[in-house]
Length: 124
Image (cartoon, rainbow, N blue to C red; front, side, top):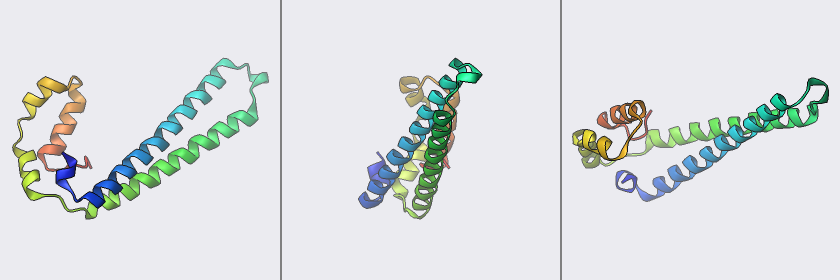
């Protein structure tokens, strides 16, 4: 459905930003989980400080990259024109029926619904 909302070149760029930013975020989350596991399963005298520092640096770098990527995505989305016809359809869509068929997490659904009712496909 997003392909109908914006032109193809912008869609390619937006998709790339989403995938890249998600990758950075997941890398940070993975490294943080490993860091947490190392700290929790080590005795203080046997903690490998070099490994801990390396993991912390990786988490920080990945998060900074994710933030930078998100800012670039937001900047592109701010200047991307959306199809007014599609935006109007989003405002009149039967979200309750869609929720009944597809969504199980009510709090997430309510947030998504509010963005779409306002015509905010970016969720900003």
